Image (cartoon, rainbow, N blue to C red; front, top):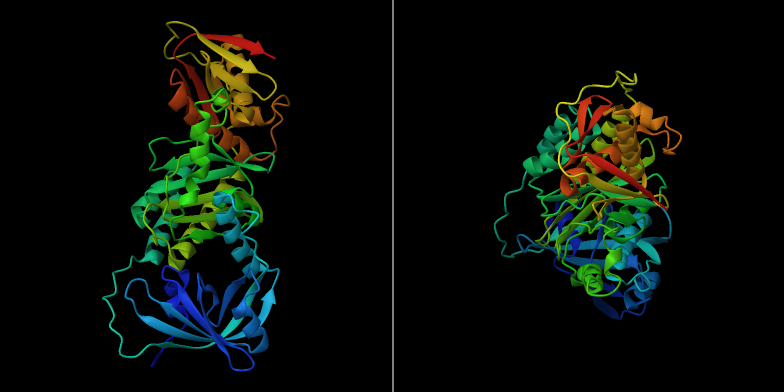
Length: 447
C-alpha cells in the first residue's frame, strides 16, 4: 500500500466511477453499497449525503468506521479511504452546498419532491492508500488553471464598461480555459429572477430569457449563493425544452414569444454554475457547460468560482467609479436621416412590452427605457443620452444601482441588434450613448 493525501485524489470523488463504501454493524455483520459521490470538505474530511435511512447509515451510527473505495476516472487507479463518522450537519456551508447541488438536479429533472437532502454526514479521513500492484493508465496532461485564471483576471480588469467586461470574460474563458459554451445571467430589479445578459458558443444568444431564483442549476446557484457542478449527462434535463416545443403546436403558442427561449446544450454532460457576488450582494451567475461528461472537476470549479469573484468585484468597481461627464447632452446633428417605411412601435403599459411591426421585441424595464428614448427622439429630435438622466428619471422607477441600468442597456442593445437592427444603441463614451433610427418611427401606445 502507498499512502497518499486526500487532496491528491480529489478528482476521484466526483462519482464518475461510483465508489463503494463498506461498513460493519456492532455485531460484526458487514455491508457494502455503492456511493454516487464523496463530497470533498477539506484535506482531512469528506461528506456523504443523508437522504434515506439505509443499512450504511444504520451501521455507522452503531460503529462509526467506514472504508470507501474510489477510482481515478483517468488512470483507473483505486484508492482506499479509511474514515470515521463524526456527525450529521443539517445547516452550514457543507450542507448548503450539497443541498444546492441536489436541488439543482431535482429542479431541472422535475424531481424536487423526491430529491431531498436530510443531512450531510461528516467523516474524518484517517488514511488514504493506493491499492498495491494495480495497473494504471498513463496520466493525461492537465491545463495549468492557475496561470489561466491569472491571465483572465488581468484581462477583465482592463474593462472600462460593463458591456466590455462581460464580453471579455466570455472571450477569455474560451481562450484561457477552452470553455466554448458559457452564459452570464444578471439579477433583475425585483431580486426574484435572473435574465440572460451575455452568452457565447450558441446559435441563438437568448439574451433576455429569464430564470426564477431556485429554478434549475443556475437558479439554485443564485438562491443558495454557492457553486454547483454536475459531471454527468442527465437526459431529463431536456424535459422543459420538450414541453416548450409541444406548446408551439397549440393555441397557447402565441404566449411563447414573450418568454424568450434560453440557449443551451440539449443534453449537457458537464455543467458548472458560480454565483457572482460583490460585497455580499448577489449580482448574477456565471454558467458554463459542455456536451461531454466530466469536463469540470474540483480544480475547474475552484477556477470558475475565482473568476466569478473577479467578475463581481470588477462590476462593483465600475458601478462605483462614477461617470466622467454626467451633463445632459445637447441635441446633436444626425449623421443620416431616417428613410423608408415607418416602423410601427407599439407599447403595452401593463408590463412595458414593446412590439415592432407586430413582432415582439422586449418587455419590462428594458422596454420602459426604450419607450422613453423613442419618445424623446420623436418629441425633441434628441438622440444623445446619458445613463445619469435615465437613472434620475422618476417615470422609469429604476433602482439606484448603476449595474442594473447598465445591464438593462446592454440587454436592450443586444436585443435590438438581433431583432430590430433598424434601431441601435451606440456608445458615445463612458455613461453616454446614442439611439440611432434608420427608419422613421411611429409610436403607438396601447393599454
